Structures are given as C-alpha cells and as structure tokens.
Image (cartoon, rainbow over all chains, first blue to last red; front, side, top):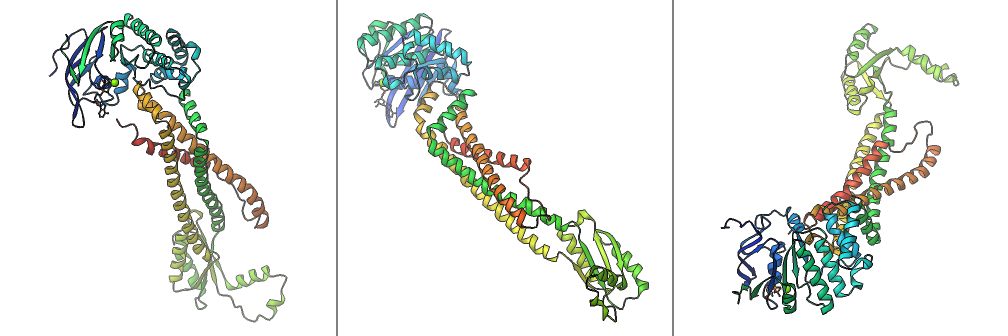
Length: 227
Length: 292
Ligand SMILES: Nc1ncnc2c1ncn2[C@@H]1O[C@H](COP(=O)(O)OP(=O)(O)O)[C@@H](O)[C@H]1O
Ligand SMILES: [Mg+2]
C-alpha cells in the first residue's frame, strides 16, 4: 500500500522490482523525489539506471511495487493517458533519439505539435528554446550532420520545449567531450533553477560533482545505503 | 490539421511508386465497377423504354358468340394491372390490316373469308409493367376457356431480363472482389510506410504524441489514395465513354434511345466508396499497430 503522499513529493517509488526474463534489473527500489529536487542516480553500467527511468516514463512496466508521478499512479494509468504523463516529462535519451529525416526545428516542434499548440506559438517557442541551447543557426540542419554535442543540445531543447515539470536525463554527457558536456551541464542547471525537477542517470563522476544535488547509488539493481 | 495533410503528402511523395501502384489499383477497381454501372444504367433505360407500352393481344376461339363478348370484356377488365380492354372484331382487324398494307392491296383480293379471329387488345397500367405482372396477366388470360391464344410483342424480353440480372450479379461480385483486393493493397501500402517510419513513430510516442496524432496522417494518406484512385478510374471511364458512345449512338438505333453517362449521384457514390476503401485499408493496417 501507498502511504499518504507527502505534499512535497513529485515522484514516489515504492518497493519497485523489475525483472527481465528471470533476472532482476531492479530490486526493492524505494525513492522519494521532492519537487524542484535535483536527483542524480549513479552507478556502474548495468546497474539499472536506464531501467529506472524507463519505468518513470512508462516505456516499461514494473514487475512489482508502485510509482506515483505528479499524483498519477503509473500502474493504473490507461494507455490513452500515457501521452499526458509523458508531456509532464522532458526526456533526454541516452541515444538522443532524434528523427534523422526531420530538421532540427521539426524535431523540437513535434512535442508542441503533439500537444496541439498553435503554429505561430510553435515557431516562436522552438526558436527561443534553440537559441537557449545555442543551436539557432542549425535550425534547418538534419541531425545526422551534427556533432554529438550538438545533437545532445537539440535533444535538450526538445526535452524542455514543452515546459515539463520534470526532466529525466539518461547519461546526458555520456559520449561528449568535456566542453560539450559543460554546455549541457550548464543548461540543465539553468532549467533546474527555473523550477524544474531534475532526475539524471549517470556514471560520470565529473557530472556528479559539477551539477550538484542528492546522489543515489545503484548497484546491481539495489539502492546502496548512502556512505 | 494542415500539419497532418503536410505529413500525409510528404509520405506519398516519399513513396511515389508504392502510392502510384495503390492508386492505380483503386482506379482499376472503380473503373470496373463503374463500367458495369454505366452498362446497367443504359441497358435498363432501353428495357424500360421497351416495356413502356406493352400491348397484349388475346385471340378468341372462333365459336364464341358476340353476345358473350361484353361479359368477357368485364372479366378481363377486372384482372390485376389491366388499364383498358378494347374489343377488336375480326372485321375491324381485317380493316386495320388492310390499312397497314395499303401498298399491297393485291394480297387481299383473293380473300374470300376473313381468316382473323376476334380479339381483345389489352393495355396495362404503366407502373405494373414489370415482368412478373406481365407474365401473371398472360397466364390468367390463357386460362380463360374463351381465349385461344395470347400474344405480346416482348416475350423475349423476359429472357433478356434474366440474362441482364445475371450480368448484374457478376458485376457486383467482380466489383466486390476488386474492392476487397484494393482494401488489402491500401493496407499493405500503409503498413510499408509505417514500417519505414517506425523509428520516427516510436520517438513521437516517447515525447508525448497521442496515437490519434500519429495515425491521422496515415488516414489522410489512405483517404487521398482512395479519392484519387476513384477520380482517376471515373475519368478513365468517362474518356472511354465519350469515344464509344459517339460511335454506338450513330451506328446503333440512334432514335431508339440515347446513351448517357452516370448521374452525379452515382458518380458521388462511387467516389465515396473508393474513399471508404482507402480509409478501410488504413484502418486495417493501423488496428494492430501501436499496441503498447
Ligand atoms: N530490454 C531488456 N531486456 C533484458 N534485459 C535488459 C533489458 N534492458 C536492460 N536489461 C538488463 O537490465 C540490467 C540493467 O540495465 P540498464 O538499466 O540499462 O543499466 P544502466 O542504464 O545502469 O547501464 C542490465 O543487466 C541489462 O542487461
Ligand atoms: Mg543506461
């Protein structure tokens, strides 16, 4: 059973298990993430960080346990409501997940189009977000010709363009050189100071130090007691 | 909405060959269905023009006394679908024959005795001039003991109508078959387009696009295929019609009937049907798609 929700929590994870086949990817994970928190999930590769994020945006379902995101019980949410959950979240995927056949502008605009926003508003908003991430000049480029750092900046732009209340970032600096990584870190910090809750999965020690916030260690699917 | 149209048109342009094949298949289906429809519209025109004024002649046995004629006439008058009955005595009959054959008076010179029987000329109520009623009436007439023989000009019409109906059935069956084939071809095209776009579709879902938003362009694509295919099919039929009809009309009984094209109503119905084919094909391929 779920305890009475603490007023400040935006994500609550209760005794969550996730099995792939017979193998546990997550074991009895319980986490409470307050509003406007910056939570860093660290741990070696294969620890279950990506899996945990996938559970939050319902790309995967829990094997046991419960998750609440902004008051929505993810176990009970109908498939029709899943898009509404995802619009609360700005997701930065480990592999960027940009559409290669669409321009930078269209890749970012798609979030607002799916929300049914007005054309003119979309134009304005997308341009402004791309300016923030410093990609305004590449607005008509296609993702495959961009560098990794540039692609990641477009991915950040897409994650924040819909004004999400939570940003989920999976290895946001994973394959970037340190200059590009610093740009991304600064951007994430900026959105955090604007009031967005951050949940970042990473195995990058440098990122942990630079971005600041609470750190949760995952190891073989278990939350490690904080040292 | 404009957005969905744009995406649909982009999809069609990205898969020109596939879409061309689909649209041509729909066009051929519609061409076949509408060619049959056109044939039926014109044939039933001809049939109804032939049926318009059916005159049934009932010839009396020679031994019926004139005194019985009045009663018999009333009896026939009471039959179903009879508009009026006119008695034509054998003298009148001969006179009419002579009038019709004025140019050959020699034919009648040697005639010593009137060879014609007395007769009733029966006309039917126009709305009742359908095959069953005509046959029903002639059977009733033949059953009368006073009547020797019944004749009407369009006995062969019955057989023709039967063949016509058989043809109609074939037309429907063939049209149905092609429509089903067209539905599956549309479904397949959409499936292929969907397959090439699966990565994009998956990403759209992850960033919060609803299924209806993702599906809309595909529906528009299917509907465009259907409507375009239908229009092309009917345009092809119309061109063929213009070429054929000018020849047929001149060489084949020009004053008996006029050949006409399908009415706007039928035209609209066919376009509607082909659009439905496009929609249905799309529905089928999207039905099992996007299940989480
Ligand atoms: N779709 C999947 N099917 C089977 N096993 C999976 C799947 N996704 C992840 N795993 C397994 O779950 C464990 C955790 O993976 P993941 O969450 O990707 O770790 P991390 O992101 O911390 O590197 C790994 O052992 C991985 O092999
Ligand atoms: Mg991972």
